[in-house]
Length: 328
Image (cartoon, rainbow, N blue to C red; front, side, top):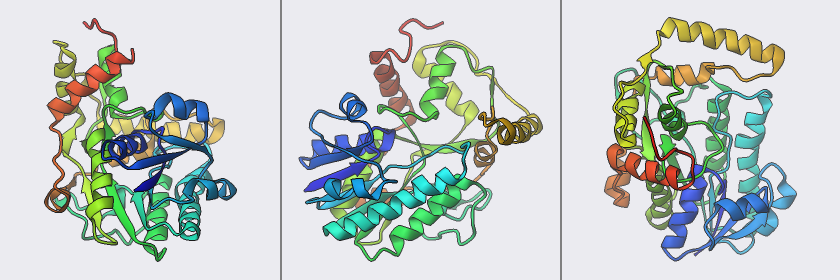
């Protein structure tokens, strides 16, 4: 199949491109910077310069493609201009749908998020219940709108819903890999309370490709290994790094809430990012657990255990000199 991947210089898109090439598909990647694309994407990718927020740049990218994997988006919980969430995540998706429809694309695969599902404290959730209510952050609401745009597009669509992604792929956004780098450099004085579910990046790429190959139109698949508290993650990361040190202490929730609220007010006045984004802190308090049973049963997708994924991630980060080789 001839395929287009958006967001290819990010962790999810890069993993999708890698899996597509490994399975013998032709891969074209939409990139805002050709230099960055050449540096980060696998050598077998055809690069097309464009931007999902600029519709006139998309026609050439989708032309002749059978499948479109739309992984481009802004995953942060804070931006100086909150309208950018809608412009990139929802508006960019709308532009990609229009371009794909005009080009006669056979299947549109959306990288959505677990945030669109209904969460109930202390309970496990699956793909069966989309939350009908607006979520609490600009990011989450923009992803809800993107999901609805694709669902109502009339195209043959498939939805993938990764949890927090870590592993052997590049990323411009702070995330799980960044926590490991901070722990390695002893620059994580404290941990936020709570936790989140995670998934290894190559598993996410493989899940997208398997869904494109096998899924029924409209199908949804959660991609997640399991839920960890930040303290549990830190313990596993220190072990993978070979560091004999206790994890940083978990900061009190009340203190984090005060810092997050103060940071939000300061951000509105100065435009500087808060130390603790309120949306990030809220997400960490979601005591609800996604299950990937459908992806395993219907796609045959096996998820990499955390210890194995972290060992591969450490090696990958060291190869790129993002981690020191000698740690204390």
